[in-house]
Image: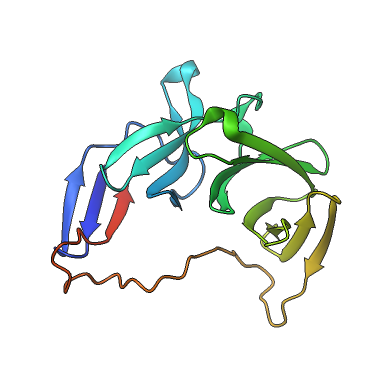
Length: 195
């Protein structure tokens, strides 16, 4: 069941149910890229189930499949969906100490996926790209690591006073208020709830 909350009207509206199973990859938190929320989900029935990237367009309120990297042999192994440099990305664990990060350089274009490999023997979550092309990673909810894909070197960032376990996230600053009650021609912000 999917409901959308609009701040301008202060109302919940029920929309079409999602045709996907959003529960297979943990809590369904959407990743916002290009005006759409994205999730890893399952579609199909029985032995024909497959893992897909699902998008929910906030403008037209429709669900659809996103193209996944062709080179990923078993997409069910994808562990994390994220954003790097404004682009949708997926983390595919490798064997031993390697993880592949696939980045969709041109939104919704199957042939635009590029891959780089990070040396990490634990669960890594890509957080963001630096201006020099280094990738900030959260490793096993315990440390932050800056990885240079060109040199294939990493260094741990020490944050004084950080807790033993944490979950890092990213956000985009904005001067736009989420309260659009004073703006008559704006549709207002929306919150999507998928159960």
